[in-house]
Image (spheres, rainbow, N blue to C red):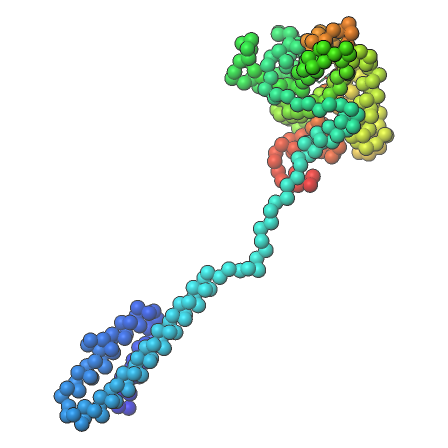
Length: 347
Ligand code: DAH
């Protein structure tokens, strides 16, 4: 092997060993750089005769071309490898399943509320809502619970750091009953100049608050208030109407209703409404679902109506309770924990 063949072989080996473009350029310098081996050979031509120069020069040039083509081949290979590497690291696996948008659903308590609205709506009741932050007057006094009356302590609640026009602390309403007053007053005002006032028939579902927390009580819960006031309304109407409602709600006529004497300041007489299923897992047990009663004359007066002329009844039912019975849920707190494993069953 002559010196030029050796040189080409060395260059090819060196280039092949260069692992990166930068190192390849260093290797290139050793052959083709200013002091590289090929350059040195060309410089040495100066000492030869014209004849020798010609033949030796041609051989060196041929060798130089081989070195250059080895260099280019390696450059190309390194660039390819780099591209390959980059493609691999930036690869996008388009076969991965996409992220689905979560499917939402109406909360079971809200769904129950809508169901109640739908049933009472079909029975001709208006649907109203009102503020969750109440004044002392609407929440207690107008409902015949005067200040310092012991019945107030049954409904301990949360107070807001603000006072009403009378200088009393605002509270989070302890029941939906203040809506009886709010709605009736607006209704009475609307028909004040009419010869005859149409009956007040309204339900008011919504959030209510009390200082209470266990498996069947939550500091925030839901009630639906019902009110029917007119010149000729009786307890009989309450019983018929509530039975219709409860049968529609539970989709069965095979249940019984009973009125159990009770006390509420805003009704006289007052009763708890209990129901009993004839079949199913709860069969044979009386379950309390609502308070009710004939609206107290003082409350009728606070509605802006004459108790000698107007009479009516009211009820207040626990919506969460109704939802628990309907869906067979034993712990009220499940509704408000926000656990999607529980909630997604109601989709
Ligand atoms: N407001 C009562 C409560 O929260 C429930 C109630 C009882 C409402 C009797 C009424 C009623 O309208 O007549 O405990």
